[in-house]
Image (cartoon, rainbow, N blue to C red):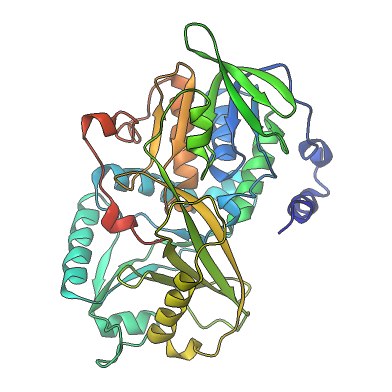
Length: 417
C-alpha cells in the first residue's frame, strides 16, 4: 500500500464526520511539546491516545519518518493471542487481549477483531510436553488454553492433515479459543483518529535525526528534517530501528534486528476457520476476510535492516504448509512482504525508562508486537505519564539485562507469530 492510498483510505473512512479534514492534515510542528512519541505505528499512536485520554496530556506530537501505520503495523500477519509461559508475559498479553475485545467500540472504528481461535500444533514428544506445560501455566494465570487430540484438532480445523504417514505428524494441539486476528492498518487509523480528536499532532514525513539533551543529561527535544522540536519527555516506539534512535541519546540497546517475511495467496471462498501455527516447522496460516490465505514464516538467520529476506525461508514455509494442508497445493501466492523485528536476548519486550532522564523506550517485541498493541500502548502511556512503570510492565525493564532477571519466552516466541 502506498502512502497516498493509506491516507486516502483513512480520509474516506472519516468523510462525513465533523472535522475530518483537520484531523488528517499534516500539521507544522510546534516549537515544544510535553511529550514526543517517535513512531506512528499502532504502539506509538496508541500511546499518544492513552496519554491524552487517561492521563490528560494532550500537548503531544507523534513523529513518523514515513506515513502512519507504514512500518511493522502494516506488515504483519495480524495474529492475536496471550498464551505465553511466564507470569509477566501472560499478564501483559492478556491485558492486551482484553482491550482488543472492545477496541472497536473504544475507538468507534472497526478494527475487525475476530476471536476465531489460535491452535498450536505438536509434532513430537517434546512439542507435546512443552505445549502441555504452557497450558497448565496459562490456566494458573487465568489464560484460556486447552489440549486437543489429533482428531479434535482435525474437527476444529478440517483442512489439517493428521494422517500417520504425513511428513509432519500431528500429535495434538494447544488451542486458545479467545485468540484470533484483527485488521492491522485499521488499528493504526483508529488510534490516529481518536488521538487527533483529543488534540494530538500526528506529523508524517518527519524523520528524527537526533535526540537533544541538556548539560545534566536530560532530554530537551529532538532534531528532525523539519527542524528542532522541544519536549519534556520523549518515547521511542520505532520497531526495527530502535537501536539507531537510542544511540542518538547515548543509550546502547540489547537488540538484534532480523528480516521477517510473510505471504498472501489468491482469494478463495471461506475454507480455513481459525489460526494454526507450527513452531516446529516455522509455518502458520489463517484466512483473511477477503479470502486470502495469510501465511507467515520464521525470521531469517542473519542480522539486517532489509525488508526482503531470503527466498529459501519462503520456500521452506510453503513446503510445510502444503504438507500440513494438502488441499492448498495448487494455490497461487499473490505477494510477499517483509518487516524488521527487534529481538532481545530473552525474546521479551522492553517497556521502560532509560538512564537518560525523560527518555522512554518501547521495543524488542520480536514477532509479538501486533498482538500486544493496545496493552503495550496502555502501559507505556502510564510509564511516560508517571515516570514509573505500571504493575503490568514493571518486569520488562531495561535493567533486567544487567540484573539477570530475564523473561525467557523463546519457546513461545521463537517462531514468527
